[in-house]
Length: 258
Image (cartoon, rainbow, N blue to C red; front, side, top):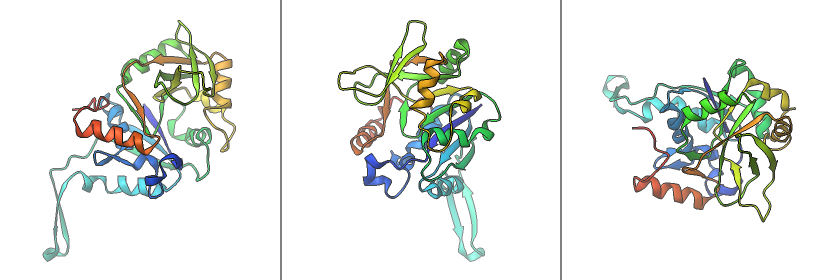
């Protein structure tokens, strides 16, 4: 089952670092937050990734092109025609497809551009800047039991973002942009989608979080998997520093892998 990760945006709210690299490549504990997200899914046995790249996509491609070396000890023997010997390889069992989804493409457009790579199957979908201790297996089971086109993980961060309404049966019955009086559930990413979602997306200029999600809610096609555990996006430099401290103190709740 494919794991689609949105990783093509500009990351303007954390421009202190995103002017050099895409936001998903900003490091937490010496590894890109994208790597942390992939490790979460991989710990549940989902190792086939499709990365929706755009802004500074070459940074993502170069990282995975050299991943084998980054995670190994290496000897360069210049006395023997520059022979390279790799020791203690710790590379992952991942299959990573990096797709150029356009420089200015919006989130919905990026999703639509990778339709051919999910091959008309159910797929995971998440953002490249948020970590959580979501039980991925329970999320998938929940999605299958509700038989909707889209299941979103609903979290309550007590702060910003668009607001979801979740009824007692686990269906999303309302969606709107955040208002000052709101302190409700939001879409925390970690979604599961059916290929019919592509029919709700017009093209590159479509924001997934606006018309497609609103139409899906109107059609009764969105389920909400409520997650009461840890969730944190890396939207600002302050968010990054918070995640960095948790990692360095060995208190990172999203580290569900050994």
